[in-house]
Image (cartoon, rainbow, N blue to C red; front, side):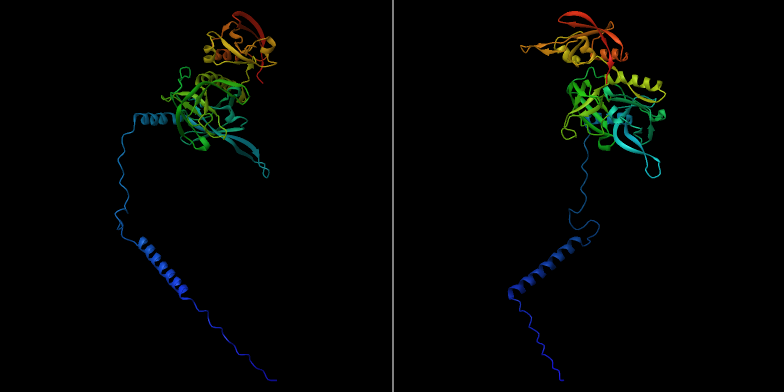
Length: 395
């Protein structure tokens, strides 16, 4: 059987138009020119190059720092060794080998109170901590289980076993003579960035904030020195580098600083911290809380009371329903039917001890225990009278 092959025909290549050929040529020329430009730009030209601009800029001599800048620098250098970084640690058992692990629950700031190893911070920073880690300014680290807190005031004292040579107590000022507009400085560890300095002014005085227990903390300092998460428990300083408050809270819809921060005034701190240190020294367990008794009243800040003509004693703004004060018939400030402000009772003494300020009243109550009955001397509608009140636990 014969076979045959089919002739194979190759179709001719498509002919390129003159315009397309021109575009290809132009593209090749553009590519070559670009490559030549890149090569020229990066071709070594010696250590200084051929362009007069290919040299480092000359450094402009600095002018002398202003006296304000020098003062801020000196303040930071003086105060920062007293500021510490605090980590709240929870202990958990590993599910595989049952070893105890320490898990960070949160961080904050604090400061060295004395050379006995006492550290002051906010109560909410160390609340429910199994162990507290304290990092000093020189990065040395100490852990402690010795913690005494005052939840109603959001203050706590820790004790670490550090040599005195490492402990730089912070200078203490007063908050009784603060003026709105004077400078304020905050040092702390916002977002874990330790030893951060922010500056501002005292924005307002006599503010009130809510503690972790829901009770009001009166007489608080408002500042616009930036306070962020991690600043809590750190110091607020005046221009002399003295402690004037403990940074505690911010008012912000976003949770970060919005220009309004609050600090517990140093006069309150200087009253409470010695009490916490004393409780800590007497405790065999090495930890605990102060739970003061209560009357069940909200008091006007001293300055506000004076603005309403109260020059002796403390003015009751509100009486908590069902509280000891309510049961004893104490009266709150109110508006009458005509819309006129009627001042409440003014407490002028407890157990014959004169009460001139909110601070005086708290100092007296803290010497009592829940269940104690006290004689409250008050002024109502210009008349002085005595009322007996049985104190209850604050929560």
